[in-house]
Length: 387
Image (cartoon, rainbow, N blue to C red; front, top):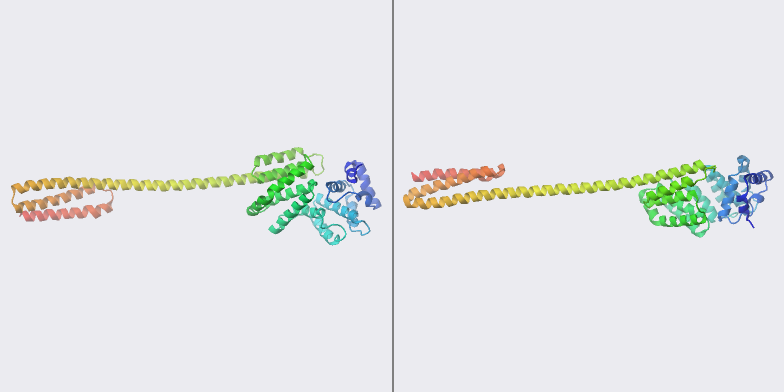
C-alpha cells in the first residue's frame, strides 16, 4: 500500500493542481498536509516540495499557508507540515528576507506546538544559513552549524537531504572563508563530508547536485581534474525540463569557476615556491663565485710572493759568491764598501722586481718603495766607505 507522500509524488500535474485548488478553496488542510509521515523522513520533505512547486495560484496559496500554520485549531503535525511547505516555497523563490522572518516566527510561535528543536526544524535553519548567512557568520557560529549538520546526518542516516546538506556546508565554508579557517574545516570535516556524500549517493543515485558537490569536495582535496569531471557530469545529467534548470546550471558553472580559481591559486603558490627556490640557489651560486674569486686572488698573491722570494734568493746567492771573490782580490775596506754597494743593488733589484709582479698599489707602497729607498741608501753608504 502506498504512503501518502508516495501518492503525492506520483500524482499527475492535473491531479496535483486539483488537490492544491481544493485546499485553497475549501480551506481544509488535513486532506493535503495530513499523514505525510515523520518530518525527518525524506518522503516528507519531497512531498512538500512537490506541493510547494505545483501551484499556479501562488498569491492565494501563500496566504492560505501563512494563515494555517498559525491556526491553533489545527493539529500540530498539520501546522508543522504547512510551515515546512512555506519554507520550501520561499527558498524556491529566493525570498530570503521572508524566509528569515518565517523561521524567527516559527521559533517564537511554534514553541510547545510543533518540534522546533527537532532535526527537521534545524534542517530548515541550516538550509537558510547555507543560502544567506555563511558569509557573515563568525567562526564559532560556523563551527556550530557544521556540528548541527553532522549530527543531523548521523542521526537520520536514511535521509539523503540531510547528508548532502552537511557536505554542501563543508564545501561552501571552505570556499568562502580565510585560508587558515578553511584548513581547520578541511582537517576536521572534509572526510566526514565525503562519507556523508557517499551515503547520499547510495540513497538517491545519479542525482546531479550530488555530483557537483562531490566535485567541489574533490577540489578541496587538490584533485582538480576529478573535480571538473564531476561538475561536468552534473551539468550533463541535469534535467533540462525542470523549471529551475537555468538556476541549477548557473550554480554548477559557478562551482566550475571556483574549482578553476582554486587550481590557479595552487599553481601560483607552486610557482612562487619554485621562484623562491631558484632565487635561493642563485644566491648560493653568487656566494660560491665570490669564494672562488677570493681563492684565485689568494693563489695569485701567493704566486707573486713566491716569485719575489725566488728572485731575492737568487740575488742572495750571487751576492754571497761575489763577496767571496772580492775578499781574495781587494783590501778589507774596499771589500766592505763593495759588499754594501752590492747589498744595496740587491735591494734595489728586489724592489724593481716587486713593481713588476705585484698588481696591488697597496702592497707596492708597503713593500717595494721602502725596500728601494733602503737599497739606494746602502749604495750611497758603500760608495762612501770605498772612498
